[in-house]
Length: 148
Image 1 (tube, rainbow, N blue to C red):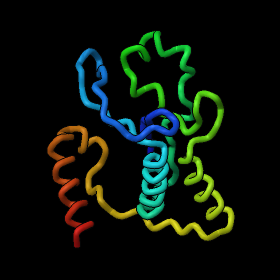
Image 2 (cartoon, rainbow, N blue to C red; image 1 turned 120 degrees about the vertical axis):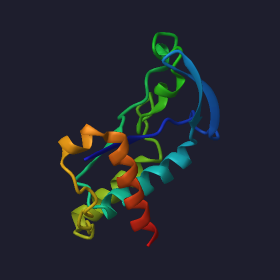
Image 3 (cartoon, helix red, strand yellow; image 1 turned 180 degrees about the vertical axis):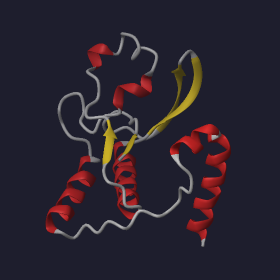
Image 4 (cartoon, one colour; image 1 turned 90 degrees about the vertical axis):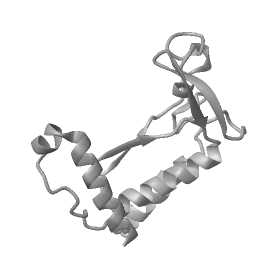
């Protein structure tokens, strides 16, 4: 199972980088256009299918109601306002089409999940004994496999 998400710009707006509050620290944050969001979700879902993922969880269902934007944490964490697949008014964003297409393929029996590649060669306990070291090694192993 894989969780993923994307904060989006307001309906009809182009993608833009804003300065947002990350736990009291200002940082740049990209708000994707809804069309960019649709492409992102389609690409991520295809990637998850290709790697044999058992499922996917999009963060999150719906955008926050704008009446909450002046309250914490939404008053400062602008990115959190628009992670939804559904707008605050209940209308669907273009990204929902990617989920519907995947569901149609699954229902038609044309969704072919690949076998999960063998990437991990250690137990969970071993990994968490030295996560930074193992992450670097496993990431290099993954990228070398992808580039082969």
